[in-house]
Length: 634
Image (cartoon, rainbow, N blue to C red; front, side, top):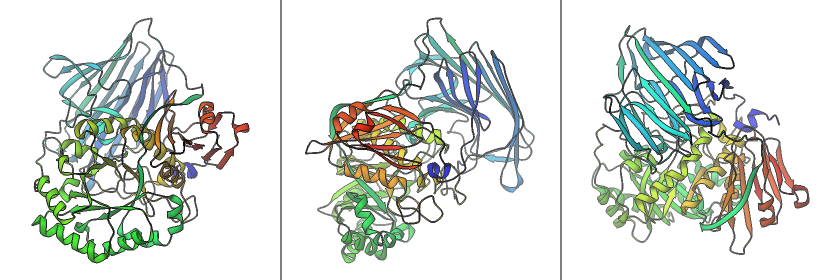
């Protein structure tokens, strides 16, 4: 089914169409000069091999390809091209690439680069992504730059630092009878666990983060790097099944209660929220997460605005309070508490984080000055007695994993995620959902049964821990670390939101926040979007459905493959409601007969063409979900 891209993505711009390269059982997708989804016998071996050039804020250059030549035959393929990156002050880096693949399982990607002038960068070289599905915790053989070889394992829980350094080659088992050796030459490589940022991969990259950055590539000094993949298999190795069969979905075991669903409210969005209270009531969030940041000028007026909304909408309230830590902690936090009292703001909880902890401290960097968190939390207890106190990170799991907070002083732990830290293409954003169970499992491993909240987690980045600022995105493009993302206005965000909730449901969260109410992170349309200004975006229906499940018993939904994400809940009265999301850009057939029988209700599908409602007699459990469609059964 062909859909208007504007309805799916909030923009008519689409991701570049990949060119499928094939040589016998070896295949790869060539996209924007790099390789994605490298398979052997239909099974993913590597998620990507990409030559990446980053600026001083970790933004990624997007060089235009020139002189592109692609040649294919049954037994081999080859690609060659040239490209360049234009940096600040007229600086320029040019490079030429050669890719070769053979039916015997050999693949090489070679790049020679030459700066025309001194060129500043945070990273210039290959990034190799190993997938996490089926590989997390599995054995690998690591060859180091000194020639030593170590038998070890990929991390199962998320490693806060680099699991492997000084790497020359990594060998892993793709499936029984098939192994893959990835060899890297031309520089020193190391691996980081990208699940920290909700990327669904382990990333091997150049150069080591312990070296200074940004750094300068001297004019006229050539650089060459090569990545070689060698896949070996025996004749008995099985191949993957195809995606032509319907996805089977059926109910599994019961679990914890599903979380309250919140929306984040910024002071500048309160007026708009007050003007749309009927839609806020229809959305039905159980929690308002009220953002307050004195380092950005928030004061008594901001708290009075929050108080007005809290008085008008009967939901629980949590103040997300940034602490400047600029002087005496008791003076600062008691001052905030006094303003909360003067504003008349009703609070059920407060979450605290020092301002400096919103910035990441990468490996090899010096931790910024910050009072001991025990002192920060103790001052917050004294200033806000009688209400629940939370802490953690207002940035991402990465920072929470690297700076372990004293959870014994807290009533709940919190962090966010963002899927566009490293890449912003559609496939990478949806693949980020694969990393979420590892994030929640790792958090539980650190903090045990401590009540646990996630969010606000949105596609767009609200604050950049890795550079000076988020990227402006006034033209509505797919940009990593951007403060706006057009897909938030399309059906894509609705599918991502249902998929997110499904992946974290087993963790037993007490609160999940995946949107604002108004503004760029909100559920209501702005001017120039597919929907009329002020009307619900597609994500509205996803958040509304998740909010209605709050407090229901989570029922696991088993799906036969990951093209569809699924979530179900049982109400106290025993009624079951299930949500499905097609997280791909293709039509997906679904056999949901088992769900239809259990829920005994209507099937409603939100898709690019509108809303479809199917009665039980018409549905018979077989559905076709178009690109990024979401469906409610029950």
